[in-house]
Image 1 (cartoon, one colour):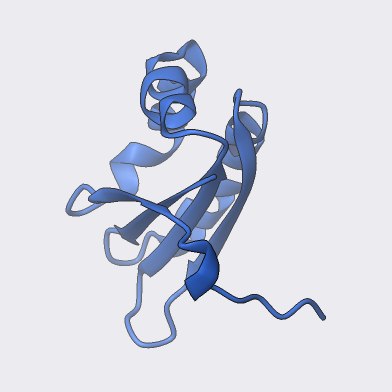
Image 2 (cartoon, rainbow, N blue to C red):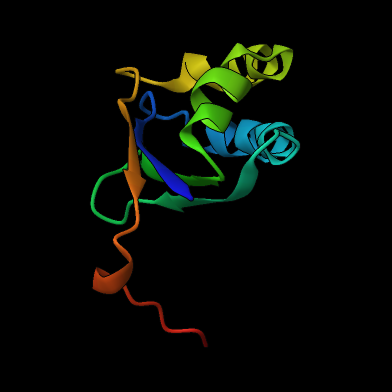
Length: 104
């Protein structure tokens, strides 16, 4: 499993519009091959900043699959105009013996 992470800095005053657009865009990502889950969190320290985490089965599912798909063009149309600056996307993999998760 791969974890994609992006800090999304949204143009000032556009957060409500961004959240509405993301509500539609999440349906696109959920249908992508290799998609596992996603989580969007709003910063409590900095207005108009979000953390997006997406779990993929493989990095190829994201980088070569989703980003080269027609669906990605729709994702871009919905979201990319909100970013300032454009986010850096980073991929991570879990280190099994150095990770823990509490299931509630």
